[in-house]
Image 1: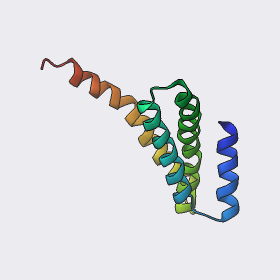
Image 2: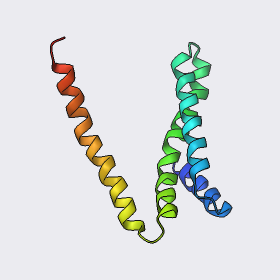
Image 3: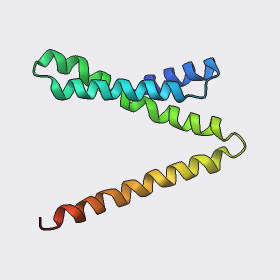
Image 4: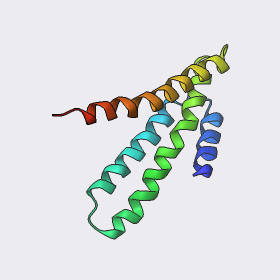
Length: 106
């Protein structure tokens, strides 16, 4: 999985790309593999879909921060910090809010 992040990062950097297309491709590959994993009823399908789902979902976050820095080159630390703060805030608040809704009587 680390090799995917390094390899895709190298690929994006060498193409002089902003990373949007590559991030989309990795996310789409991970989502397609996850749907294949969900629909699989044969063990062989799991052997194919699971690594693809993991590689697609682990590859895009590195490209995401590359894209943020490419989009805001004059303030890379501030832009990355804002994105990370929003991500971590959602990670903290999201489960708590879902838990509150789940605990309500229907």
